[in-house]
Image 1 (cartoon, helix red, strand yellow):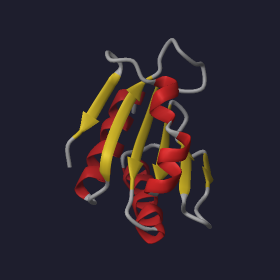
Image 2: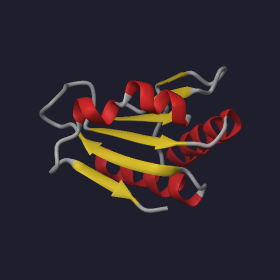
Image 3: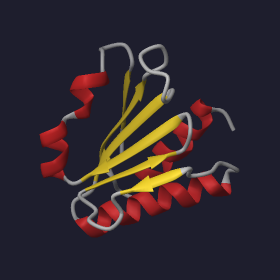
Image 4: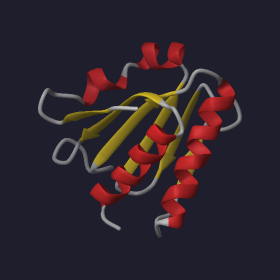
Length: 115
């Protein structure tokens, strides 16, 4: 599965599971650590954890692998490294504080995913 296909699996899963404010940022050429950052929000710690776990399960079913996971204990900001795709699932307060979109997004490399 290539990075674009993996990003689609993750975005589709998050949308189906009621994540909100889902953004896919193409960071190819901006960093060597990934091709895509996917950023989404959950309304509670429980939802942040569930959304992250659903995304991991969907990628694994599609033949991908979660190489590293962080933040699943506190669930204010969960990060999953899928290799060429990095998923960030935030609660509202933490997302506003870090505002990753500001660092990586240009007008032409951002896709908002409708839920």
